[in-house]
Length: 293
Image (cartoon, helix red, strand yellow):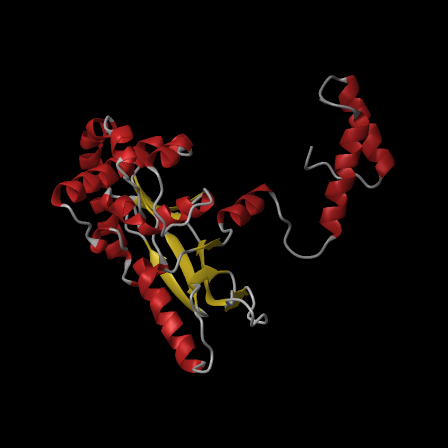
């Protein structure tokens, strides 16, 4: 039917009426004529036409924000502080966004109470898939292109941009990871997959003592997720999507309650935190390095 050209609405109605009488038209003649009018209007517009394939490619190439990572965040914050020496209070740090700028919260106008003013930096860090193996990153006004080796693909899920292999393993790179090169990201993917496989064997036994450990004060931190074989970007994005502070300590039962489809990975993280807690209880002190990212 797409190849049939109708001069006006009357000819279109006659054509679809004949198809309807022959039993070759599903739906009403009125709806078919309305669709013909929509196609005719689109054909009159200049420029390329956005068909089904074009719409699918537009969704495929939709930009996604990539977390900065420690290296890039520290670099950008140091740079902007050096350019603005008179400005203080950068406690919000540097975060990724669609455009470059500052973010500010609170105020310091009331001198009778403690100031609530905080300032932070937003760095444009946006990635876009060009094909299954090619992607580009626009970071702080600069463009970086990346190509994956055979056997790996760029994908996007609810946590953001990721690199996936044929076995179902994935890695959510930060801008800091990408600047270190694709080989570094692939190495992180393989290392995390091996670490998760090893942790799964221990998780069942560790979770049996969950309630006892929680009564003793066991809590889960971001460092536990990294030690369990998860990537920094994915762990941070998962925490923020569930309204959690990535740098705070959370009860193990609270994480398992909101895990939903990620129960297997969350269980590994909880088991890792319980092992760390048991070690700290036996040695009688806590090492700050095991809680800090």
